[in-house]
Image 1 (cartoon, rainbow, N blue to C red):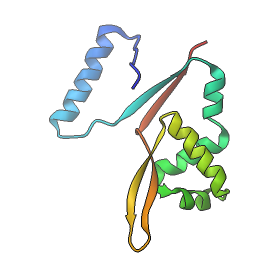
Image 2: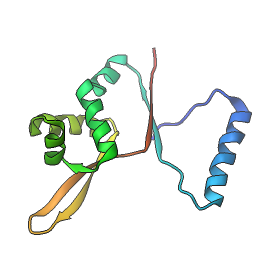
Image 3: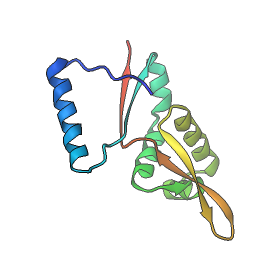
Image 4: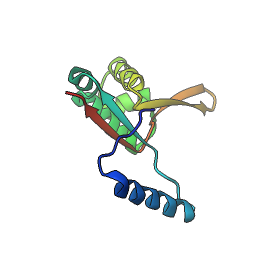
Length: 122
């Protein structure tokens, strides 16, 4: 996982720490988040095509198999598989195996974190 860099100094660090501590004291879970830094803007453009963003938005709301995801998006299963694999390689999605009674195991597509931050170094 990448290291986060904040520019708000000690005051911002203390504020974020207090917010997390308050959540933990209440027994709440801290939302997973991930920051992805792209050294080349073209890599980010490759990652975030319109179809991949749409795919990610659907997966954020519903955890689906690739076949069900293709049907939901109205797209070819092969195209959805390529897009899922690309988003897997960038660390935005993961596959979870789920037992499908009478049919073996199905892979469910789900997001890695609830929140993503993407940055480009120019």
